[in-house]
Length: 124
Image (cartoon, helix red, strand yellow):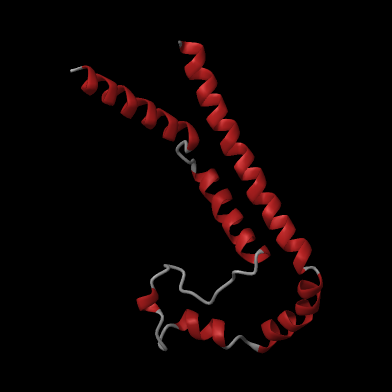
């Protein structure tokens, strides 16, 4: 009986901890998260020609988005060629900035965890 009670308490604390670390996102938060993901992919050089839905099965030769990504139009190609030297020159700084973003997000998660623990200790 005592063991079951301890397990119930542990499960409740774990749920509360996960809720504190990952609160529900508002629509604005979701937009921010998507923007951060795009920025991180860009700064870390992880921009792939993958389908938007992430489904590898949809990558076929008839997929218009894939074809457009593989064969850009002339103005887009010229713009990309003009930007390439700048991106290559600033690659280290962009990676460092991406890592700063990840570090800041880690700080926020740590602050949430410490806040959760502080509330739990204060309740005792």
